[in-house]
Length: 271
Image 1: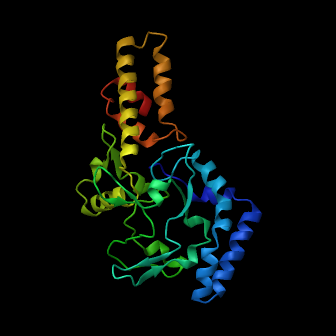
Image 2: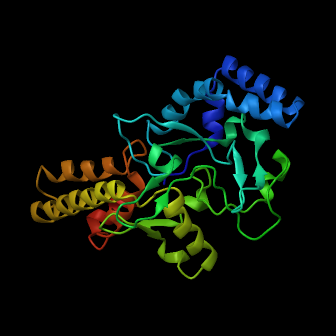
Image 3: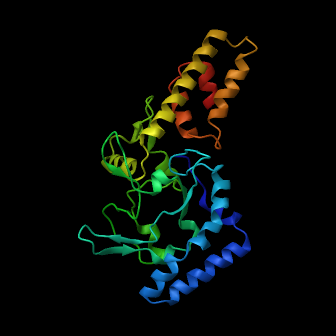
């Protein structure tokens, strides 16, 4: 998960899109509950106008997994759900109707993170759907002003501190970062986010494991060639390229390259 500055996305939206969102937001604010539901249910054509700008912000990568699949469409995902969050008995727990047309609440998500899917390895159903659990605290926000008081369980790619909570194993699995392993709250957030965002879905783990093996081979080749070999600079460039923000799984690439920082030449790539 790489940090995304949500303000850059919002600032990239053209005036006509912002006006369209603002008009819908005003209509929702003025409506009764049934009217709010109707406007939000029919709102897809309004917020999908923002998708091309969400994609431009991350080079079409999912903001949660950093995966990039040209064969799949991305979703305009509401971080705080636009639909009703239900209790275990089916009753209404909360509803962020007031954020349905707020672009600061949008994230670009692949279907595996946004929609419910069964992880065949674990047998568990993952994916966000309309789930949005909170840590202990003041509870759900009922206005935009109260959002800053919430303590979401889910890791948010638009929060720098959240992005720092993840590291990756050579087999591709996401894990809690080493410097946060003694923090029970952080551990709980990572474990629940792995399921609710499908961060460790088998296909993502396979891709990241392949990335680790690619990096390992490049480092070993660099060791064999030595810094005087003309091909050495190409190896350095390849490793640096894997960490570029527009590359799939670039944060995992950083993590994997750090595994080989006992080499002085690898250390220099990081710092």
